[in-house]
Length: 415
Image 1: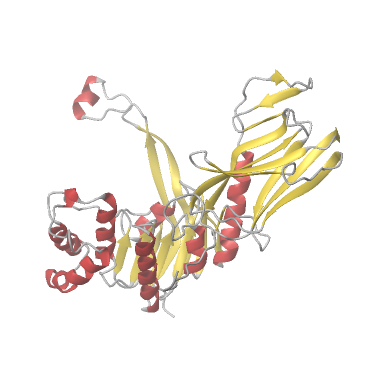
Image 2: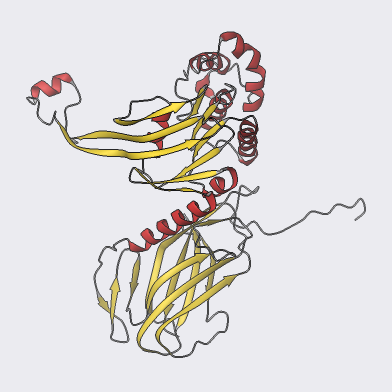
């Protein structure tokens, strides 16, 4: 089968400039051309090679600054690589910076024509597809209003609708599948699947690893501009998530003052951790029902919090606690061995304690799992980790509140 996209040995280098460089020609002369020269160079991409077949979706994962967007832009012809080359078969469409090229004083109707022509459609093709574009964006009531009256979400929906009506052979998508509300997102995903069924080759960048698992046939993992691994999406995502979790744990805490505890031991305090360290929490894993480390899961799924500890000396009946809170520090769950009526034995040496949550019915959003070990009377903490373990709950149908409990509606024509 002929490949729709072939990337071989791709590399791109950028130069950094002094933060205090002149911004205008006048300023440059006044300051006698100081800080005009480029500083150190860095490689945004190094020796990246892969291919994509028609009808295949390839997902790209990696932390911020890994080179994902640079890679997509080079594939789309925005910029030239310093090494390597890209081969494309067929017409290319890119959903990158949605809304670029829109004019705020033009109506939505006029912007459709301008943007459609820029995207490679003829005026006749735009006219033929206009009704479908407007219907997909759900903007029938507003299409003749100036774009400056649109909300950001409305503008993004219109830009996405234009982009997917260009009937491409190759489609490049950079973090734009979170456009609009949940219903609109599902419509976008359905359209992406239709492109795949029509033999379109698709490259998708997303921080939503659930989308990578669900949509993609193959996944690539970029780290600091290099291709770490490529292959089965489930395997690649699991490796990526495990590394991200490990890096979170390795972050060096910022030292705070030291003070004495009521028991006379030293309480060591850091930015995200404090405690006497008589009993130390050495590792925390958030685990799904398949035993995989996760930083995101779906509402209602089981979640297990594995806490590995080390106690060089005998610790009498400690208490372990787990708190789950939202980004705005609203406590969603506050659980402990003491509240569960569990009296732990004397601990010494290394061990593990696990909190099993049969289901966690949180609404979609970003949360933190805080973990701590305390004296039996809660007098002070042996070791407490605050906002160290992020947890993303994938979007649900519910838009408000914290909980999304299992429920059903029943209708009866009699009270």
